[in-house]
Each structure stands twice: as structure tokens, then as C-alpha cells.
Image 1: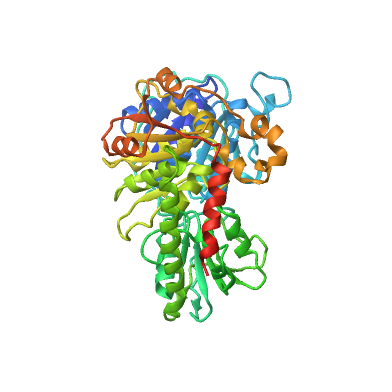
Image 2 (image 1 turned 60 degrees about the horizontal axis):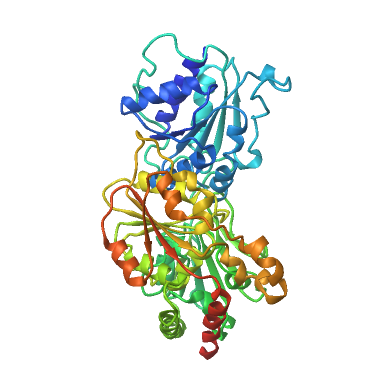
Length: 552
């Protein structure tokens, strides 16, 4: 079949597989796909988003998948355009996001001949995404099978489509409409019937029943969902839940768990059940690596269980509990958490304004029921972890981030995608650092015809990478090198950066001003810059850690 016919066939199969959002970066070889996408968008059969930067496009698609819980496609031309998607594909692989890469390619006969914009695109993502290299002789059945495979995976997949001239259709219509038999596959995004290959969800296992006897804690990492909370409540156990876990709610959630794991309470832990993918703290990793602790780890969507010391027993499903454990165990954690949380709040309240801890506390408190928060890696998610009071249960708040690999890549585009994918009238907030914001400033480049969400991005600007001040390289003996090779100050005027893309911008200088700004409704994308100092980061962290000395 000719290139335009093949492109239409693939897009119709994508719609049949549940795809409703497609991100496109411009190019020549991808022209058959671009024209069909334009027409399908005009017909209302899918929503098209166009971005000039493929790396941002990949993360936009990732965010759309995160927000909508559906497979989302990202379309590129040939050459380096495809390689720019690697970071987003890696994140999708490690977090189980449903990202479909559709790359246009030259015919296979041109590979290795020096032909312009021709490279080895087949298998370019390696183990992170299986590739279907579809040649000029691919049949409609070949295309349908490949599309069905990538749409049904729990994780990313790659369709590499070889196109030969002519690259534009010679007649209308460019898009004949979706398949007459409607969508198949997994249109509701629930994950039913997923491909049992690599990266797919496993068949549901019969939950193991646990005896409540040992002193147990539940560690809820990224994407644990409410299952982590329900397990802790059923067992009467402390819940150590990260902000992006989806579990941090109710009266079993321990806000200051990361610090309490440095106290004698941690020594008394006999068993840990891990749900989701915990990534935030060394104390949690140390707990999961202790040889004297029984570790049960539930397999994630990619079939991987968090097991840093390779000592865990892996479970195919979240276990159940026969009965509640000793109430005194949970009471000890609650009492210590209440005391330590109050001490931290007093310490933070005495810090000069404006401090990064103030910003995290205000953003966490501003998030209302039904609203969404996208939180960046590095310090913002850790500050939120420290300052965020557990929310009431059954008041659904969605707190997400790119925690598969915990990079700072693509967070602005991810946040835009999450906001667009969630839809509706409720707002989305984002909390990011200045390096994270600058790393994906192209995420603010939206053309005049593009869908624009209501998104407030709070940027904690300390002019560099302050998280390194908390690590070994932040010690005094490395001070001579620290500023240039770790802190990396940039001196960028964020207001001018926003002005270049027509993005609404405001600088806030106090907690009260930030609180008021967050309470004000806004349309479209706006940036709130909170400038803070990083000079006292290490000292503040040490002072907070010292508060644990009084916990028995």
C-alpha cells in the first residue's frame, strides 16, 4: 500500500486501540501521518497536539497518558527526531506508562547508504520499548497486529513506519473516519486484557493472607494507589507513604516517616510490605535492605518488585490481613509523628521568608479535593514529603511525578499533559525547581491553535541545584568545586523567559503572598516564581534531623 494509505490504516488502528490523544512534531517524512492527524482532529475523532521539540513532545504524551490513563501516541519524523524521545520512553518503561511511539522512516534499503536523515531506527529504544519495524510491503493485517500489540502493553511500544514517496495523498478525504466497529483493545484505560509480554500487567494473583503478629509497616511508593492505605488500615499498621503514592491519606499515614526511620522506632520494625515504587529516601532504602527485616514486595505494573538487597519475597498481588495487629505499635508511631511534625513546623516557621519548605507546605495545603499536583524531582518532592499533612481519605487528590527514573527531564511538558489528560474544570498545580523548569522551558511553547490547560506552575528558584548541598558533595571539603560543578547557578530571569512565550508570570516574596496567589483562579498556564536561598539548605536539614534525637 502507498504511504498515505498505510498512515491512515495505522491511525485508525490506534483509535480502535483506545488512543484519543496524539502528539506530533513536524517533519517531512512523517507527512502522511501529519495530514491524516490534522483531518482526524478536525473530525473530532482524536485530539492533536503539535510541538516543535520532540523531547518535550514525548513528555507531553507521557503526561497525557498519566492524566487520562489511556495509551497516548507521539509521532515524529526520521533521524535524530526519534532519538529525542529516549528520555520519555525510559521513564515510561520504568513507570509502566502507556506511550506509543510512531516514527516515520526511510525505506530499509537506504539504511547504511548515507541517505539524508536515515539511520537505524528499528530497535533504537532497546529493551525499553519493543519495536515493530513495518516495511513498504507491510499488509493491513501486519499493521493491525503491531498497533494492537503496542496499545495493549503496560509500558511503551514503538511503531517504525517506512514511507516512500509520494508522501502526501493525491485526493481527499485525508481521513475516512474511525473503524465502523468502534474501539477495541482497552479504550477505558483500565488495563484489562493487556499483552502478557514484557512490561505487561500479570494475571491477578490470589492475595496472600498475612498474620498481623510481627511489628509491620507498609511502605507505599509511587503509584501504590489506595491499596497501600487500605492494607495499612486493615492491619492496623503505620503507613509510610510518599507524596506520589496515591496512599497518603487517613490517620495511619505517618507524615514524618523519613525522619522517624532514623530513630529507635525503626529498630523495632520486624516486617515491611512494599506497594508501589519507593524512591525518595535513603532511610527507606536502608530499611528495605536490612537482613533482620522480613520484606514482602508487591510486583509493579512492569513486573518489577522494589527489592534493593534482593532479599524480598515477591507477591503478585497486595496481600490481605487476617485481623488487626497490636494497637500499641501504631500508637507509638502516631505519637512520635505528631510530636516531630509540630517541631518541624515550628522550625520552618522560624526560617526567614521565603523558604523552600514554606513553598512546599503552601502548595500542599492549597490542593483541594479532585485537584491534581504534578511534583518535580530533586528537592521539591522531598520538601513536599516532609511538609505535606496526609489528606482525608475519599477526598481524591491526584499527586503524580516522573518517579520511574526520578529525572528532572520534561516536567513542564508532563504537567501540561497531565492537566490536559485530566480534563474537566478542576485545576492542576505543579511544583518544580528552577533547573527542572529551565530544562523543559520549551514545554511552554504552545502554538496559537493548541489546547491550553489551566495550570499553575510554582517554581522554587534558588539559582541552582541545592539538593547536592544535602549530599556528600555538599560537605566543606568539596566547597571549592561545589558552586560550579554541582550547584550550577544560571542567573536566568524567569520572568523574561515566560514573557518570551507569552506565559503569565508573577513573583511571590512571602508565604502569605504565595497563599493568596494560589487561591486566585486563573485561566491558561501561569508561573509563580518563589525565589529562595540555598545557602542555609544544609544547615536547615541538619537542624531538622537533630529534632529526632528526642524521639525514643
